[in-house]
Length: 139
Image (tube, rainbow, N blue to C red; front, top):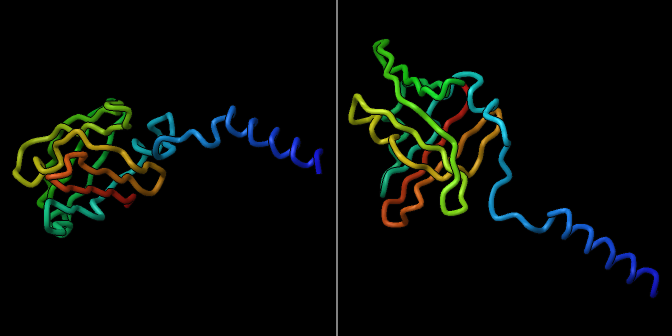
């Protein structure tokens, strides 16, 4: 029994020291490879009280390695902006800067990055009075 308790304690201390229990939020990749590979589309956009996902039907988006953000809008025009990954208030962020149309300007924000992998990007606004969520899915 004593050996078991000592072993369990050693495993717990090892886990704590290795950071297994010390996560503040999502585990995100250190690289931008998932972000900059491929074409994305808005799979969910919630703005304050409404699901506005359908407002982005026909749009496609690219996060380019040179930190430009390109939106292909219905009708064929391409609108350029920029993007950056940062950390603010201890939270991982994806800053999107784009203008040109009122619809695209809704994406212009300092988003909290809650998920990033090869198939999905999930973002949310940390302003609790302006509930906004933006999800991109790989096309």
